[in-house]
Length: 401
Image (cartoon, one colour):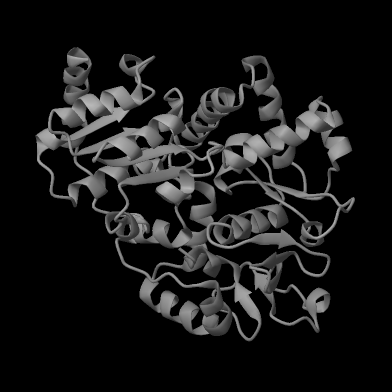
């Protein structure tokens, strides 16, 4: 164990010596102020979980000898007990451990529970969004934070090095004209519609900052890593079947959300309906696919198709060359809204959000015909800088976080 500790100390010193971005994701304040002994950050690969953990650590008052960084996917940690190692470090004065890729540690739920029960040490861990928590006490014991892809607001802040406000959904529905006007004035010569189109092309994952030219290839690499490591490891999907998951993503990429029934989709992908439902669940959890159900299904069993979207607009460029403009609009809306609110699809309009608001998504001339006479109903229009009455600009939903 002494050799393992020394090896991980060297990795930690290297990791802690790297300069961190000054920009902090929207969860930073919530995590730094958390009083929980164990804090978890989960999300898709590439959204900035490791950077956020390191930024949080630097805000705390620990000496270099009291903190440690370890990644459970590192070969030197293979077959090691997470609890035994943290206990060994704790007994030698350790006060805080950052644990990356915790889902790759054996029996990580039980190991974390033992650390919580028996060791007085601070833990921040990151994990794949694909993790399916089986221990009912897991979310009760720890502070858990989901880190989604960058919002449009965060992307603009990074691009232009300015600060912009985030708004609640209620605030947007009540005062969207005022907020859109304020944002456009703040941007001045930078046009919001140009920034929005940049965002849906390459702005959702922070690694675009390092190398714009290889962004789509990095997206492809991220997708493959999620499929071949996270999904294959956590759900025991054999490598031979991972290609079917990729085929499913590709099929959704080139289709309209309700174009394919489960029967047609299972035939196209080449799996049974039961297997297909499992695959859809895996990809939804891994944040590669967004599975949106019909609103009335909550109350009774109905033979109604579900809507399947890619989880983020940037995935289109990595999976298919051409996409439907309507699908891209709905994908952006669902991606931004689902970060903090419940979302279902409905017969009248496109989406019911937070069981209160009905939204119809379309272009700048989209009519109100489908949602007229509904309470709290809005048309969400693409290609407009500012809205009026119950017509809200699509881009403004990128300011929800």
